[in-house]
Amino acid sequence: MNIVSLETSNVKRLKAVQITPDGQGLVIVGGNNGQGKSSVLDSILYALGGASTHCQQPVRFGEDKARIVCTLDNGLVIQRTFTAAGGTALAVTNGDGEKFSSPQKMLDAMVGRLSFDPLEFSRMDAKAQLATLKALVGLDFSALDAQRQTLYDERTLINREAKAAWAGVEGTPFYEGVPEVETSVSELMAELKRRQEVNAGIDGRVTAYNNLLAQIQRGVDHIAGLEAQIAQLQKQLDDSRTFKAKLEQQAENEHAELVAMTKEDEAAILAQLDDIQALNGKVAANAQRRELSTKAQALQTKAAELTAQIETIDTQKNAQLAAAKFPVPGMSFNEDGVLLAGIPFAQASDAEKIRVSVSMGLAMNPQLKVVLIRDGSLLDQNSLAVIASMAAESGAQVWIERVGEGDECSVIIEDGQIKEA
Image 1: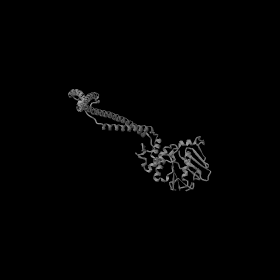
Image 2: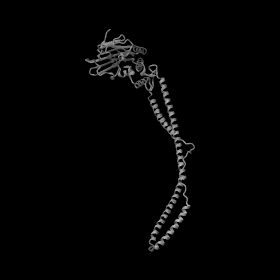
Image 3: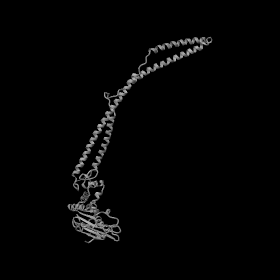
Image 4: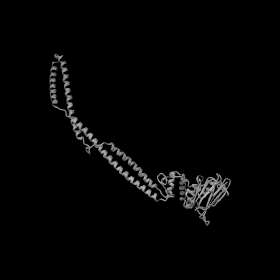
């Protein structure tokens, strides 16, 4: 569907304007700044769009009411009125004069978002462009992307753990010829304890013997004192000598027994314990290395499984991309944004951006093939030619606002009215 007639009065800067486009193609609205060019495109926007498209004061200053009548080539007549007090009314009738009960809902189903400004697509950021293109071609990878991201994150963690495990393997020494199980030291510890107790007993008897020798020495000293008192302590002297002789005999016997005794070797047991501890350390290191190696191999296997799942998801996405119908040949996208002939859309030429944006606008609005372009002054002759060719091929009608009064203009607005040729 195209517009066959536009009547607008008292909309913003306009007084009364009636435009009857010559079929499909370009409708270029020219004129100098401040004359009402934008108000013509705004009239189409206000007629077709909902309340969100209306400006704060659509009625021309000093007037009470504004009116827009837009007639389509299928017989639909859209009439929108505004009052200076802020009221608005919409009526849509078909070729038989019948009114639609929900006119705005019917218009919303006909008009795409990019119809009002297709070049908005080229001004979007990469994420917004990607979302718009996905919605257009019916591709929603959100579930696959979420699943892929989950698998990717899990694989990243597993690879990190595997790397740490292999680092542990590399950092743990391995000893050849070492038994798998640590050697028990309980029997050697018991034997060492027994020998230590025997030696402690001998040490105790040596101490007792030394004490006997000390007692003898004290006896000698005591005898020396008693001899000075021979007259008075003769009896004590005899007793002491007898006691001394008894101690000497006891000491002699004890000495004989000590001479016959031999201390047992503790160093051999201690050396064996040191050897076992060193051996057990090697056994533990080998066990740790085997455990780390097993863990690292398991993690590698899991990471490979996740990689296979990610590749399956990527294959599914590529298959869907291959089957999708894009509005422009060579158009596609990846995770970063929209691509054109394999390069980012942002790197495309201005002509390519215009061609893609207008194609997007037309593709998103298959019923009412009417597109509004407000940045017409930025379009050179080549760009205008590109848009004209696209409009002709798709049977669309492109309304362009352009500063100036060149020959390419379909109508020129001056002081809110159409300037006569």
